[in-house]
Amino acid sequence: MPAEPRTHRSLATRCVDRLVYAAVRVAICVIQALPREACQRLARRLARVLADTVPVRRQVVDENLQMAFPDWSAGQRRMATREMWEHLLLMVVEVAHAPRVIQKTTWRRHLRIHGMESMVRLLWSDRPKVILGGHFGNFELAAYLFGVFGFRIFSVARELDNPLLDRFVTRFRESRGQVILPKKGSAPDVALALAENGAIGLLGDQAAGPKGCWVDFFGRPASVHKAIGLFALSAEAPVLVCSATRRHGLFDYDLRLEGSVDPRRATAEVAGLQALSQWYTTLLESSIRRAPGQYWWVHRRWRGQRPQATVASTEPPPAAATRSAA
Image (cartoon, rainbow, N blue to C red; front, side, top):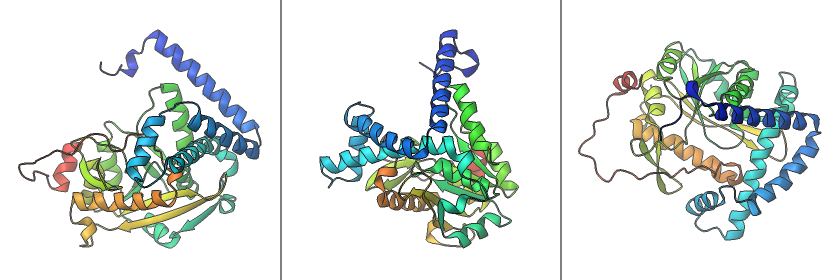
């Protein structure tokens, strides 16, 4: 059945939305009231329950880990699963506490920036920019930090099914100057932001289905959205691949510029859509391999199959493709 339009949600659905929203807000209030050390201990215990007792997407997580790390034992996969759940729970704690903890005068206590000079130079350049991350580390906190630093990022994100939760999460994301654009129908806004030399934030590891651009990810074919590369190539926007990797506990991160590329320079990485897509996918894979327990193995990254044959390359030039996407 087609998805229910948000403007025609049934009374029952709206009631469920309100109950879920109320439960989340109560949970956030409890987290904010607890000491951060207590939250960290609780996250570790709940992670064991989610990994070992409650079958929350257990099969999906295990299958993904088997595909990514075929040489791992069952014990290694179980440990990575626990680390993933603990990391996801700590992310929730960090989002709840971020407005009090991360400020212009305090961020240095919690963050080490690798490649800071190159990152700042590119972000302050009078050109459009594309900032890429993945479902790795605390990407929410990374985007929040860019706002704390004074950079205005236009981030493309899928709307949550619950409109009350969607507005709540959007308020947090935009509280430091980040602008959230909906995933569907945002191509004109993205093109306008790039035309005005703005910075676009995107996640580059979302499955795009058979019509996406196919790349190698952990030795297996995976699709990425063509729009990412097309926007960068058509606008001649430098692409920055960034990550925020947890070092030890809460609010203890390495913010890293994994790599950057400039479409105005005739390098192999920007020879075309396929080359650019593979370049940033390889960088994301390298960052995940450093800390596998901080990747979202809960989503089906290798969904779909690569088309078996194509008649000829019908890929439009970047500028025409962008107009078509809009």
